[in-house]
Every structure is written in C-alpha cells, then in structure tokens.
Amino acid sequence: MSNAFLHGVLEDEVYMLQPLGFETSASSVCMLHKLCMDLSKLQEHVYVDDILITSSDIKHIQTLVTQIHQLFSMKELRSISYFLGISVESTVSGFVLSQPTYAQDILHKARMLDCKPCYSPIAVKPTVTPTCDHSFANPTLYRSVVGALQYLTITRPDLSFGVNQLCQHMQDPTNAHFFAVKRVLRFVKGTLHHGLT
Image: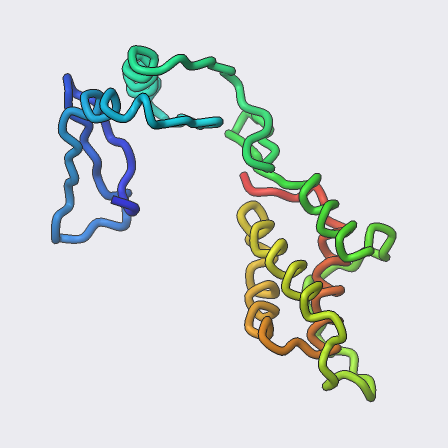
C-alpha cells in the first residue's frame, strides 16, 4: 500500500490505486473495506498531532474530512504555511516547498552561519592538503550534519547527488570528506530560500 494513493471514497469503502506512471500488472487496486468502522475501533487508541490532507479533487477531501469529523475531534486550519519543518508558500502555479529555517539550523550546528556562500555544491577540483586522507577528528559531527542534509534534500533535489556522495563515507570520514560537507553547506548558505515547486 505504500505505493498507492487515495483515489476516492464511495459509501463505506476507500479505493486505492497505484500512482500514474508506476502501475504494475500485479494487484493494481488495493481496497480498504469499511475504513470508518476500522477507524472507530481504533479511535480510543489513536492520537494524531498533525495531519495534512491534500488532493486535486476537493470533493474527495471534503468526504474524507467529514468522515474523520464523525470519529474524532479535529480542528481544521485550512491554508497551510508550515508543516513538519517545511515552509509552504502558495503561488499562482501551485506551491513552493522550502526549508530555510531548517537549513539555517544545519549551518548553526556545523558552526558555519557566517561562511562565505559558493555557487555549486560540489567542487570540480577538490582541495588537496597533506591531511586530506587523515580520519576526521569528529565523525559524530560528520554523521549528524550529513544526516540533517539528507532531510533537506526533500525540498532541495539539487543537493541529492552531493549528499549521496557524503553518505557513502559515514563509517570512516576523512578530512577531505568534511571539506566536501563544508562545500555543500556553503552552497546551502547561498541558496537558503531555494525550494521545490
């Protein structure tokens, strides 16, 4: 069911279909029978702090929200501006998702808030110093910063390749690998408000 999305609600059944472009011939439709009945059994044991419901079909959203209201006390906030650390800006052509606050937190963690920005996340010619192949003195910091950068790639696919390269050295990072982390962070500093449309 992880590769399925909510397609529609008909009476007491919710139909799930595979996303367009990802269909397979085997088991293309998943059906969740009597969703509301199953939810009512769980309502005493379920606590949800935040939920985001979105669709291009407003009727499906209204039907689902109505069913959830019958089972749970729920406050609707309507327009979204911030969700799970992701800033959401509504534009004429859709939404722009970005993480400027989270990016600044990563820069703070790495003590690079005042670093000089650069214009690409990866150096064409990596810096070579006599200590490049020595183990990095603080591998915990390396892992923490690179792990945080992984979450940043949700709205910043332009960082994906560089962060993937850094992830391959989590076990035993060298000084050269941390230089590469700093390069990505300098790029992030110069592109704090970039996002995903």
